[in-house]
Amino acid sequence: MTLAKKDLNKALEILSKDAVVFAPTFDMIEDPSEGGQTMGEKKFMPYKEGMFIALDGPNTVKPPKDVLFPNVEKMYRYKTGENAEIVEIFPEDTKKILFGIRPCDARSIEAMDKVFFTKDYVDSYYAKRRENVVIVSMGCVEPERTCFCDSMGLDPNNAPNADVMMNVAKDSVDAFILEAYTDKGKELLEQLKDLDGGAGEAKRDVKCSLQINKDPELDKKLAGMFEHPIWDKITKGCIGCGTCTFVCPTCYCFDIDNENYGAEGCKYRCWDSCMFSDYTRMAGGANPRPTKKERLRNRYMHKLSYFNERYGETLCVGCGRCVANCPSHLDISEFIEKATAADPNAETYTDAPGKEA
Ligand code: SF4
Ligand code: SF4
Image 1 (cartoon, rainbow, N blue to C red):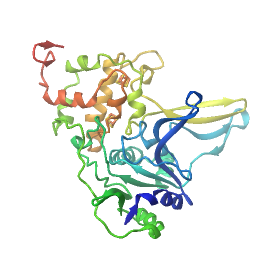
Image 2: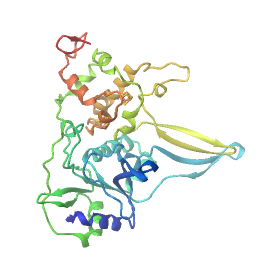
Image 3: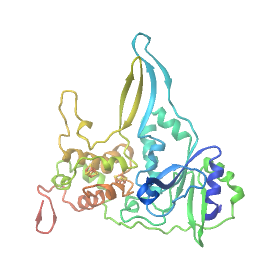
Image 4: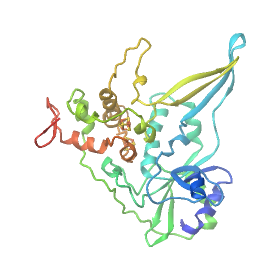
């Protein structure tokens, strides 16, 4: 179907009637010095009437993954002591629509589905949310300078696992073409049939700004580079802040803890980061990843090799968020190129002529 740009808000108002629609917009921050409000970060927020929908321009700073896998979530409430019992379980089942997520973020959901649904294990909290989410993906219009998803095997114009794919129309920047890929997607487009401007062709010719040279067998090459001197070199500058984890659409590690209040308590889980030293610290104080070198090596190996071994695909979707937001300018795309060019058996590592690591 064709949806005129001017009808975008009407479409989201229709969809909001029986679902919470998350769409990309700008957070408005109170700022008395500007006489009211100033524009903050681009993020996914629940749609409200008249909300500005920011479908083009750079991607959101944080991915939409917390709609499915919240930063902090209550799991269940319980009583302690003699009458100890679970009194309330919190599976959430609100119908939600993730509207306008980029193909890289859609692909990251496919990776999380593998983690939370396969290998004989189903995470009921993730499963309940996932069942109730409809994904409407929007093909990229202006990729950022740090976007490299097509070098990681994705297409910035298409998200095969979306329920609906949306692109700018080929013959008009003022219209979108929406195509249903699943039954959930067909139902969603049925709700919008009164706004349908007829058939049309989608513009699908966007390429990522950052093209990198990646060995197609990098996962296997890295498996033999655990003790390679490249790791000493690339870790320099990392301050262990964890930003890369928190902005990454495919990081899924979490911690589970309790919060007790008198005779009651709540079990919750929250995101964790393998970039923190506590992540692997054991009860006796020993830590198998004692320095930033081991921690960053684990992060890159997980993204580019371990996940391939377990699930048959790379965990980095090339969204470029960790590249754009690392305060020390560490860059996984640069690492991929360096590892692609490196001699796997080298005993010292040099990444520029005459420059010893
Ligand atoms: S964002 Fe950069 S500095 Fe912070 S932990 Fe990640 S790699 Fe290290
Ligand atoms: S590792 Fe970096 S570039 Fe890759 S998916 Fe995560 S945030 Fe995006």
